[in-house]
Length: 597
Image 1: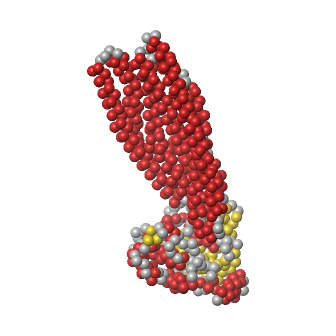
Image 2: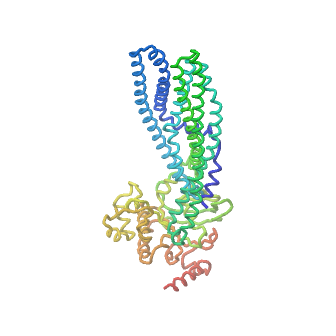
Image 3: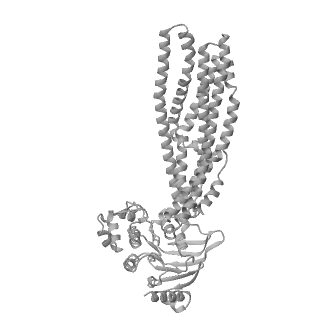
């Protein structure tokens, strides 16, 4: 099951709580915005200084002004405190806006980089990775990093500097009282250490389970028809409930740790304040410490544990970010097996002469789908491949389109080795019509052009006319601008197939591939398509993969495949005269067609 695959693969990347290498990679995304981060850090230091300054003014207000009945001086101290509050608020606003802006910019850059990288990967990667898991990387995992990039690291600096300012003022006021305040600190350090260890695994498991949830939802919504056709709703709900329950339990566990830890911090802070009142009060009675200093220390004590609590929370955020970063960087480190470094050959003016020379290929090691395949297609020829499901027909198309690397052998186009041609340049000259047509949300026109500005309106209209789609287009209120839902859900199979034909034609390819392009359409639509095909293949190298042998009888050459090998090759009539595998397939299909007629 997809969820199980995710569980295994996600566990493989759970490493250190804070990985220095991953941290360096994360910090590298700050570089384009380093000057803004410096400004934000300076603002944070100023904010922390202003926060710590107010308790430091308390002894001045009490001991120097109130006890001496200096009302005017007290007013000045109050105004200074009020001024620090207003200034802190203004700077806090600027710092929050700036850090959020930085975070959004970095997240934008990172998400763009991840998505572009995903599109650059070869099909082998997508064969092994559930779509829901990949979506989680681009959305959920990237979003987790926002708090780290926006405020996490910068405000962590602010908390550290606040602690430094507090310690400085405390020791400058009274070293003994400062040590009494810090005497409870080892207990807090121990509690924080236990908390970090407990929540680490919980946070990581939550991210894993989010990926499992996304993968499961994506898979079953995509296959909703099968779920409903076969009455699998309740079973699907039950399976989803297991994953959902695991996710909820992990979140509850995380909440429990927080619910225990933060009251403990408050309790430790209260104990520290109690120690200050007990010890400091005695010192006041003995006139060793002033009332103002005692009140200041009570304020500092309350303020001291707040940044420690915040730093613990920031550490937890950082741990969560580490878990997400491991998976994001694992994805970014994925390399396409098809390398195109130092390719010098040009794919300009491809004419369409194709040759397979002793090609052997396996999707999985030693499980060969093609075995020593050799054939030649001349420019402008129409070649058909037939054979049982799994015989290797579609694999030939995948290799020709350079979706996978060969294990052995060589493929050439116009005499140039395929390895010496860049994918993007090569695919400009190849168009394919698949059995399972995929349409994007948008319009009929956008699904024909796929956003390529080089495909003109004239080319679109010509393609629509040639595939027999004009009558259907003219029946729509908005013609070719008629909206299309995701996967073309509001269109019939035949209509989607005709749009896919128009898409292929509009690109005016030199090599046209039809992979079971008529197997899912009704008889009337098939007649339209067959008429269109006769026009399409003129002057183009055409490769047709078909189960219906009646659709390929006029091909220049028919190649019969079985279990990854070429068994027969020739024209329709030549193969019938051989009385071999093609003849048996034809006889079997002829009887089937006759029995249905």
